[in-house]
Length: 367
Image (cartoon, rainbow, N blue to C red):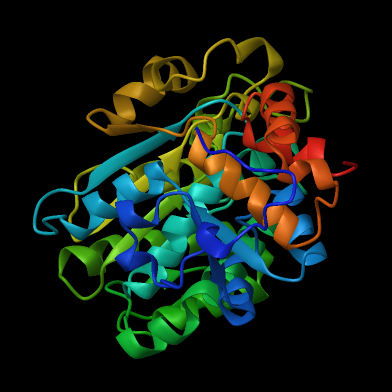
């Protein structure tokens, strides 16, 4: 057990100077590393950090992420991946608030540093529960588009991958006709697809579909390596949504064009990439939150879609991680109570929070 005297000074053993996630290993477990403002802006401007975590990082004037065992395990797998084999699929699971989204943020940073094209959905339930305006698809019968969300996602993709996409110079492999007058010819830069979607919301959802298809082909032909990261993946298989038809009947998530596009990309019928998703009880309606396990959260259809996959649990903090988190809060003057430096004070925080990351964050806010 780690012991602290009432007057002991907290040292910087909870930090690491290794800022490149590619090099993170067991030695870095339980230590924080800093992410520059420029990287934060590139990777997370369009989402990817939980709201509370993002707000706290802004309050504390800097984004730091703890290197935890689930991310280390995943990074080890990715570093040893045979990219000539069909894509591996990894599923992060655990209680709501255990740190899955932050682990995915860590993996996004890894993928960016590794030169992989990022295909990132920050939180699928936003498309299911809080749609900004769904419309019947013109191209796909009985399906529904998300015009505004698709524009936002294309902007997010462009921000995350802009410099890399310019370097790769990927081009379309077929011609896409959007109307009698508008088309994207074969051999056009993928940036034209992206720009069209961002400027023409009407075609944005189909531009997302075309872009994902082209990235899949580019990976297969070894023109790029793709990392797919999706938070709240189980929401694609939710039995409810807040999208309604004119007759007030519910449109299921499986009837969204975006769902079809991302389910196509998360099949293992391609290579030169990796797929990392999370499942979370909060991505489902309240009556479907009994268990955090993938089989329950994904349901039969979702489980069969991803099978086979590698499950990775994101648990509550270990004792070492708990003390590192407290050390971080103390260093940033977020936790100013003197007893936070004592064994008794920390034991109180550990017992009250159950070492649950989100509960601990909320607990120390007024401490």
